[in-house]
Image 1: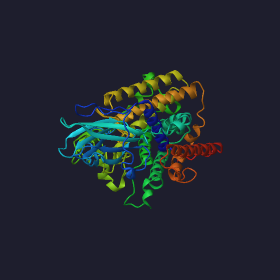
Image 2 (image 1 turned 180 degrees about the horizontal axis):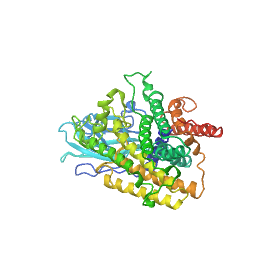
Image 3 (image 1 turned 45 degrees about the vertical axis):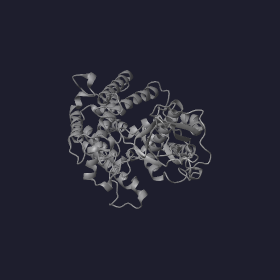
Image 4 (image 1 turned 90 degrees about the vertical axis):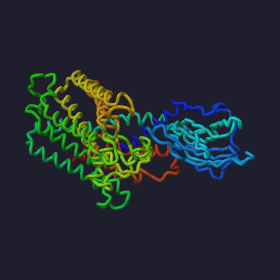
Length: 546
C-alpha cells in the first residue's frame, strides 16, 4: 500500500506540475524566424496516418515532417530528468521528394512526464539543424515540421504544431484525490514508511523500557530481539519476494535483500545497542546525569560512538573502495548518465559490494534507474551498504523516543527538542548537498540511501512528529482515526498487500489500462479495503505482532 500511495502522490505532483508550468520552446539554429506553437497550418491530412501508433499513458504522439528534399533527418531526444546524459537516437526521417508534395514522415512516441530536448541532425553532414526544448502533454498530438526557408543561406526552420491538445486526465478526479489522499498520504508517509525505519527506532526505546520496567531480564529481551529480527528477514525472503513473478522460487533467482530484510537487520542492531547500553533508571524515565538538559544524549555516548563508526565505514567504502572500471567515490546511475562514461557502474561501491557478496542473480534486476538512464546492471536499493544508513535513521528515531520518555508530559520541552533536531538535520543536509539537486558533496539519493537522504528525511520526520504530537497529544484535536488502525497492524497490512495485491477485490482487469482514473480508482479501493480490514481487526483486538 505504501508503494501505491507513493505512486499516487507522484501522480498528483505530475498533474499539478502540468497545470501550473507552461511549457517553453527555444529558438532553432539559423537566421530565420524561430519555430513556435500557435496559429500554424495543420499538417497534411492523411500523412502517415496508417502508421500512427495508439496513444499511451504518460506519452504523446509526435509526427515529424521533413520537407528538405536533399537529406534525411536523425531525431534524438534528451530527458530533462536525465542528469549529464547523452542524446538518445529515436528515429530517422527520410527526405521529401523534390515536388515537396510528399514530405518524409515518421510517427514517434515521446515522454510526457518530463521536459524533453529534441535534436535534429542532417544525414549528409551530420550537423545539427535545430534543437527544441518542450514539455509535451499526455495524449497530445503534435507535428514537427522541418523546412528550408532560404535556398541561398540554407536556413532551416523547425516549427512545432499542436494537432490535438493534451488531455488532462487528472482534473476529473483531482478534487477527490486531494481530499482523500491528502490526509492519507501524510499518515502513510509518517505512520507506515517512517514506522518501518524512523518510527521503528522510536518504538524500540519505548518497548524496551516497558519490558525492563516489568521485570524482564536483558537475556530474555535479547532473545525476543533476535527472534523478531529472524522472523522479519524470513518473511521478507520467503513471503514478500518479488521473484515469485518469475515462477516458483529457486536458489538461482532468489532475491536476498528486501524491505523486511533491511528492517530486520536494522531492528537487530539498533535494539541491541539500546539494550546493551541502557542505563539504570532509564526504564522509568528518570536518569541521574550531571547535565539534566542533555539527559537523553550524554549518558548514551557509547551508542553514538558505534553509530558514528558505522557512518565512517559507510563513507570509507563509498568513497575509497576501488570498483573495477569505475572512478572512486562514484555515486551515479551508470548507463547513459555521466555522458555514458561509466555504463556498468550503477550504484558505485554499493552496487559492487552487493554483486560481489550476493551475486548478480540474487539482487533486484530492474532498478528504477533503468527507465531514465537505461542501465543494464542489476542493483538493489535495499542492499548491504545502504543498510548502514537505515540503521542511522532508526537511531535518530530512537533519539525521538528518548525525548518522549525522558520529558514525559513536558510538551514544550518535547516540541523544542524535536524542532532542534529537525534544524540540525536540515543544516547537515544543506551542507552535504550544497542546497542543490545534483552538485553537492553527497546528493540526496534514495536508491543509495545516501547520508544526505537520511538527514533530509529525518529532518522532515522530526517536523511531522512535532505536528502529530501537537495535534494528538497536546491539543487533542485528532485521535489519528481512521488511519490509526493500519498502524496498529502495520506488518500485517504490508505483507497482506504484497501477497494479495493482484487478487480481487484489490485488483481487477481494467477496461482501459491507459486511464489514470481507472488506476486511481483501483488503488483507492485497495487502500480503503485495507483501512476497513485494519479497523475490524482493531475492534476485535486482533494485533499481529512478531
